[in-house]
Length: 138
Image 1: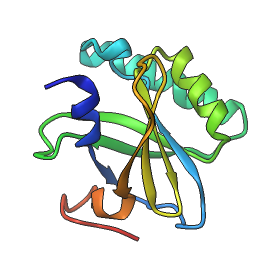
Image 2: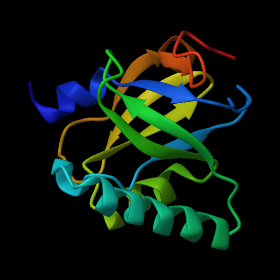
Image 3: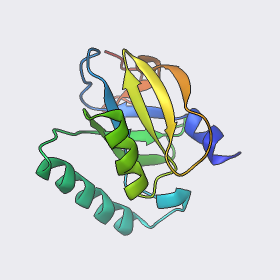
Image 4: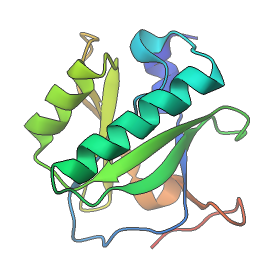
C-alpha cells in the first residue's frame, strides 16, 4: 500500500484532547521522508521538536499517530499554529505530510508529497484514549 493511502488510515492515541473549537496541526519528527529510523534516532528527533515548539512559545500536546491495529505508532504533537507554518515545519522536518484538524474535521496535508489535500472525516472518530486504547472522542 502506498504511503499516502497508509496516512489516510491513521488513528490517534491521545491522553488529553484539545477543545473542538481549536484548529491545530499534528506534526511528527519521526521517520523523515517515510524512511524508518531506529527508536533512538526518532526519540532524539522528537525531543528536539518538543524543545523547539516550547521555545517558540507553543503548548504542544503529545499524541501518537497509529495504524488502525495500533501496532505501528509514531509520537507526534498537536500544536495550535497557522496551517501554513505547520506545513513549513513539516517540510523542515522532511515529512511527507502533516494532519490538520479544524471543527472536528481531519485533513491530510501534503508537505513533500504532491498529492492533493484531503478531508478524512471527523477527527473524534479516529481518536482513541491513550490510556485505554479504546475510542475516546471529545
